[in-house]
Amino acid sequence: MNRERLPYELEASWKEKDMAGGETVDAQVLIMRTNGCCWAKAGNGGCTMCGYRSASLTGVTEEDLNKQIDLALSKYKGEPFVKIYTSGSFFDTNEIPESIRERIFSEYSGCKRILVESRPEFLTSNLVSTLPGTLTVALGMESSDEEVLRTCINKGFTAAQSKAAGELLKDGGIGVRTYLLLKPPYLTESRAIDGAVESARFADPFSDEISINPLNVQHATVVERLWKRGEFRSPWIWSLIEVMKRLSGTVNSRIMSSPSGGGSQRGVHNCGKCDHDALAAIERFSFTQDPKDLEVQCECKSTWERYMQSERLLGTADDLGRAFGSDLMIR
Image (cartoon, rainbow, N blue to C red; front, side, top):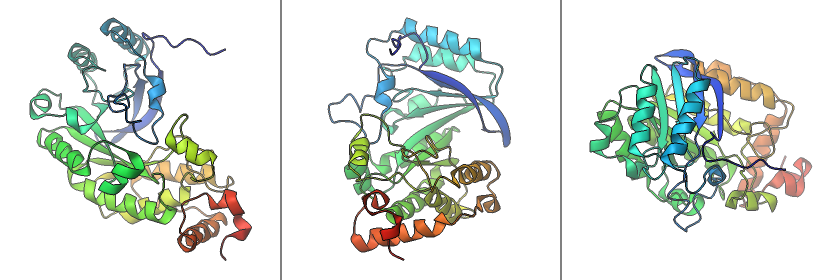
């Protein structure tokens, strides 16, 4: 039996490593239960890949949010980096009222770095002028291709809006982490790689960090329906490595990735034999930025190359491995 999800409890919390002040540090990560993403609740279905609506509730009060902060503080052990996620936007006052935002910034004022997420429409010059200099705002731009944003992701804003928000934050002395989605639905593997590289180059001037996020198939989403029908395959880890190799040394932003569901059929994966080593290489590179750390060997790399050739010849983004098996892909 599933336990009742209570509005005064955190959705999740854990500790991980990240960068602050040029050093690898411990980070406290919190996912707060809020009243949910305004875009997902607007009646248009929300983003095609996003399952975080399940982390939101209705009727979450300021008292509930304060209790969540109390719980977070009881778990806090002085980590210099704190990441605070909601199911939508930190600066949407329907999710995080101004009083809660101010309390969070006050309670964690001793941190070297705080990270939150927001859609660009909530970021104004007046707001930015009030933000602490230790803050980094993560912008889920996903792609610089407006057609991909509109038809593949249903993002509800444009790359130009993300750029304007990033420039506003940078001008205000606030850090910017830009999220890019590797392999939105309906794209072939090779087009997804090219798109991620192009999007990173677009985002570089207004970003401090660029996080390449391979699509993870989440429950009750458009992408899950496609995946169950064999019309979508989560990206190969080789594709993520290829994006990082192409970007390494060519952009000023830190290039990073922390894949959700890595090594599973729903997440970024290779053959299964090399997944652990390949994901470990990506984690190392995310901290060192040394392309030598991306060197991984496995015979399935040739299968990945044939897979992309087959996609191009057949003109499809369907899961060819599931449909035909690797033996039927072009050699």
